[in-house]
Amino acid sequence: MVEHRLIEKMLALANRKTAAMTEENYDHVFVDEVVDFITTYADRTHHGKEENILFAELAGKKLDDANARVMAELIDEHRQARRKVAEIAELNERFKNGERTAVGGIKEHISWLASFYPPHIRKEDDAFFPDTEKYFDESELDAMLERFRDFDGTMIHEKYRKLLEALDDGKSARM
Image 1 (tube, rainbow, N blue to C red):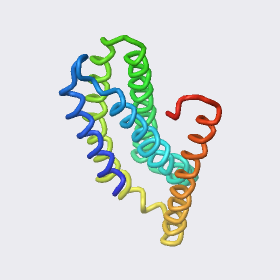
Image 2 (tube, one colour):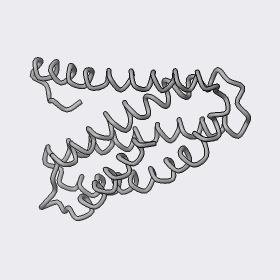
Image 3 (cartoon, one colour):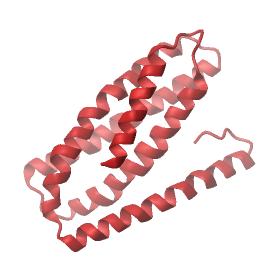
Image 4 (cartoon, one colour):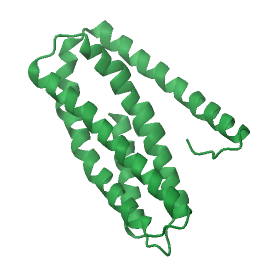
């Protein structure tokens, strides 16, 4: 849940800053950084732990219908966010290639993300996470927390290994 606070702050900042941008003062580097944050931190790292560890463990449990439905909704919401971020990245590239009208779509998608994530996060923090703890005993919860830490530890290495490979191949440093 600590990660949720950072995601909320970044999206609020991104929304504030991009809302003030126009085609004339648009900052594509800032948007690249927002895309990188959401892709690496919110999606690969945070959603990665949820989907690859927590949800995978829950899939092996006998969930009640309400929790199974909410888990499916959360996974779908992660997919929706991924699509929006991919659209932002695509529009940002189009802006860099001279399509100044892409700014409107970028602002719209960032605004969508900034309004989308708070209810998504509340659903996880206030209902789903506390309610699904009942499916695990203390040793399972401790083991899952250890797996979360291990997962985090590999992400920074993966990110910068890919950066090196991209730079070595002469490609864009953006992942």
